[in-house]
Amino acid sequence: MNRTAITGMSFHVPDKIVTNTDLEEMMNTSDEWIRTRSGIEKRHWVENDEGGSDLSLVASKKAMEQAGVTGKDIDMVIVGTASSDYYFPGIGAQLQDMLSLNTIGAFDIRVGCSAFIYGLAIADNFIKTGQCKTILLVGVDVLSPALEKSPDGRDVGVLFGDGAGAVILQPGQNGEGILSTHLHSEGKYVKELWCELPSFRLEGRGFSNDMIEKGRHKLIMNGREVFKHAVTRFPEVIQEALDANDLTMDDISQVIPHQANHRITEAVAKRLGVARDLVYSNIHRYGNTTAATIPIAMCEAFEEGKFKQGDHIILAAFGSGFTWASAAIKW
Ligand code: UT7
Image 1: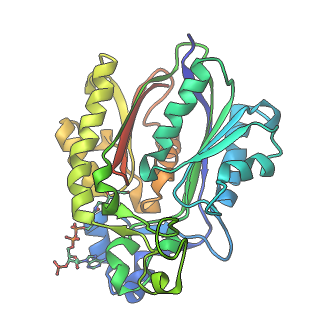
Image 2: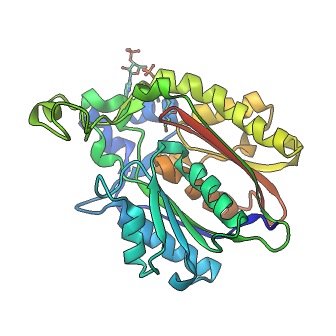
C-alpha cells in the first residue's frame, strides 16, 4: 500500500505586520516581556474584511502549483480552523467554490492548534484506502478579531497571529509519506483554552448584547495550565510516534512542533534530550497562528534545508480541548 505523501506545500500571511512595540500602548505590555516570555517579535493580523478563506486561497493555489495539480485533480478539501469566515458552513465549502473545484467533499475540523495533524490523519486514511487520490489540506486561523485588544487581554492578545498553510496529499511513489499519526483529547480541560460564543445552548442562543459586554466572545486561555500540559504532552506524543515506527531521535532530522511559545519548544527539546535546533521554531516571525503554525513551519524548515528527501520528520501539536497529536513522515 502506498503511503500518503506531501507533494506540494505553501503558506500565506496577511500583509499587515504588528510588532511588539505596536502593542505596548494598546495592551500595557512591553517588547521585552513578550520576547522573553514567548519568543515572539512580530505577527501578522488581517485587515478590513480579510478572512481565513482569503488566506487559504492564496496558500492553496501556491501548494497546487508546486504539486503540479489543477482543480480538476482535487477530490477532497479538508480545512483545520477555529475561525471560519462564518459560524457555518466552514471554509472547506468556500474553497470548493473559490478554486472552482468539482462538487467534491469539503469540510472543516475544529480542534484548535491540533487541527492540521488531525486533518493529516483523516486525509491519510482517505488516500490509503484508495477513496481519494489528491487532497487539499489547509490549516488556517484568523484569531486576531477574537483578541481583547486592551490591557485586560494582554496575557493572550500578544501571542496570536493570523495565517494559512496548505498542503497537497497524494499517494507516494517511492516509500515516502506519512508513517503514522496519533490523535488525543482530554475534554475536561475545554474551558482552559476556549472561545465560548456563539453558543447554541446558552440563554442568548448565539449572541446577546449582555454576553458581548461581558467579553464572552473573546478568546480565553489559562496560560499557565496550558503551558504545564503542553510541555508534558509534546514529548509524550513525539515518543509515541518514534515507538510506533521503531525510530529513535537519532533518526529524526527535524521535529516541527506547533508554535505556541519558544519556552515550550525549548522545554520539549530538553525533555527529548536533543539539541535545541532539532526542534524547529519560527514563532518570532508569526506568533501563534493556531492551526497554521505547523504547515507554515514545515514550509520554512524545508526551505532552510532542515530536512530533505529521504529524511524522517515528526510533527507535533497541542491545543484547545485539550487535544494533542503527532505525525511521523518520511520525506
Ligand atoms: O496554542 C495553544 C497553546 N497555547 C500555549 O501553549 C500557551 C501556553 N502558555 C504560555 O505560553 C504562557 O503561560 C504565557 C506566555 C501565556 C504567559 O507566560 P507566563 O510566564 O506563564 O506568565 P504569567 O501568566 O505567569 O504572568 C506573569 C506576569 C503576571 O504579572 P504578576 O502577576 O506576576 O505581577 C502577568 O500579569 O506577567 C504579567 N503579564 C504581562 N505583562 C506584560 C501577563 N501578560 C503580560 C503582557 N505584558 N502581555
